[in-house]
Length: 495
Ligand code: HEC
Image 1 (tube, rainbow, N blue to C red):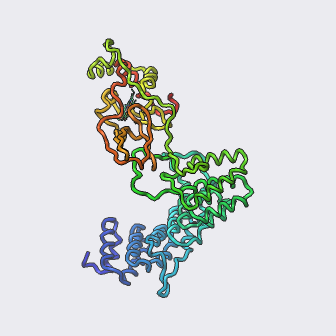
Image 2: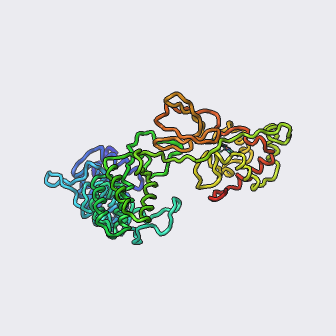
């Protein structure tokens, strides 16, 4: 390749192999900037008879080689439908090259290519234009971007409930538009649109705008808006802005993080008190319906308006817990697991037919329910057992109940926490927020620990699930219990 002339080298980019193209691109870049390479790359990328991947390779090489000097050409070629998406991406690829050189001076990039793409039928080009605009310092197209927060069907919200397994494609463009409004600080455009057709998109973006202008604007709009629905949107948006997310300190990782949102580590910022005062005053003149709506928002966002304390732990402890009692088995009854060897129990439990209905009663009466959930949608405790029948064979389940220490379920290791005043507390982690850790101990009771009171956490080898829980059952009853676990399928009301 080293022997190639520049002309031949650029021409050889027209190669069906992506690996070869990459090698050639590198060689071109290695040789450095030069007018004839630029001309050659420009004509290659403009050649409509070439395959698009070759043209795109030429575009990227050009930008890498010429930097901001390539921008003028890149914007002009964006009028070619095949290159539009790529050219717009390349032109804003580097944050330090977001300008054009005109007579030796840096001037801002002209906006017409972006504005055309926003109107394009080609959704990829449209999406790219929105993303690229998010990188530019200008807000001149913010209004157009805001208008794209509406769904293509013209609606503001999805028609059906969408879940993760069912992608919501119509949301992609509105979502990108909101991100761009936030990145470009388009606060004023959003405020101006409150009350018009694009109100929902404007509120959506304002929820992420933690700045004085957004707060002042929302407060001002509140008194001038006649519409009660809009007023209540303003209150919800201010509730969202009350806290902001803390700066990531690198210690937020846990196996069972608090995912109740919207912030993981809620922190007050310089508008928090002002928002609080405003919400308190607004609350006074609300009718009962709006008042309960606002109260709902405040509790969702964990905003403790009437408490001086800014933080409230977001993981709730269960009330009225009783410590579990390991049953004492009658030592004279030869049929009880307590009086049988592990092998005999295993053999007898494996041999019998199973009755899930009886097992369900045993699950609840043998304290399993203090540490395990057997239906979806319950407050998580220890390992969720809904799909346990799919994960384990019967003999493995028997082992995990009779010998809990033999294998420890991933993520439910026992931890010993040493507190700053020297206490040692052991348990497994049920939930972890930025401020507290919710533990469950082997008594089945839960306990919350303030994170800043902890000195050290050490993993232990034993399970927090006590051995002997099923000592006063017969192997046949154990088999019923297993049949119950096997019958679980995750439907929410199993109790
Ligand atoms: C004090 C709390 C506690 C009680 C009570 C309890 N468990 Fe457990 N259980 C745990 C913990 C913690 C683990 C995870 C550690 C381990 O694998 O031993 C676990 C693990 C399990 C596993 C394996 C789960 C997996 O994903 O690997 C099964 C099955 C199980 N328990 C069943 C039961 C049954 C049945 C009962 C009632 C007889 C019961 N548990 C009572 C705390 C408890």
